[in-house]
Length: 302
Image (cartoon, rainbow, N blue to C red; front, top):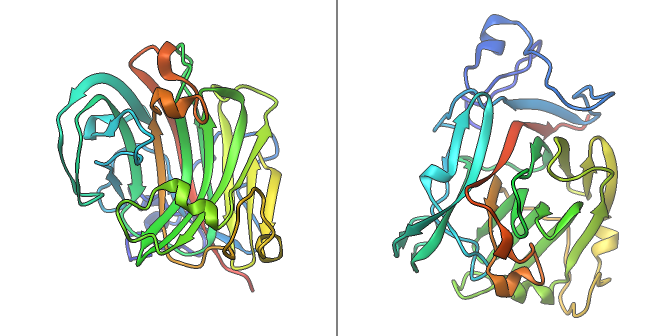
């Protein structure tokens, strides 16, 4: 990470203001769950985002769309910082066809806008945490997420947490992996040749309630957490050509490339929604997923 995202020996750094490091004081505690300490062996907190303001040195808004699966396009108004919360909103409003800087492609017209936020810089290995919740308004189909994503030089590397409108009592964890993905027409489904590393994890509460979700990523494993409880772990041994779902014809391993951290909120098409995300037919717009805070811990084993 560059100089504006630096560690402080005696204090936690607040990315938006840097006041914690400069003053030598610690940041106020975050609201989380009983027993939360924010301290983990082999991980050091270097980014503590409370969403008091939008810092363009740290964050950028997306302008693309999620492949052929989405029925909305990411727009600036889809990401708002208000009252210490990042709000990602889907609105029913026309979005004209136009060029996407994210995808370097011309995108079709859409009837809905939505929001995506991601880090300006890339990182490699660490723990990412966010406290967020899905809409409380009537919903039937959406995807709200926290994930890592890199698709450079033909390598697709993605570690996901996804909440779906069609499964309001579950969290989905994913590893999406592929080589040779530089072709713009290389769709998500083509990653199946490297395995379908997806799993659903039942929750003890609805996704519309505040929950702390986390991903740990090291050279040896990935692990997913809900309110501090580990719900899944994948190691290189697990991924050594042992398919989670057929067909898998190529070997997969723990991702090893620098990546951005991303959060987005979008709706699937009705055709996709019956399989993933839920049919959006009964959504009430506008609808908003709220993110209370975000933390990134660098991987710093002794």
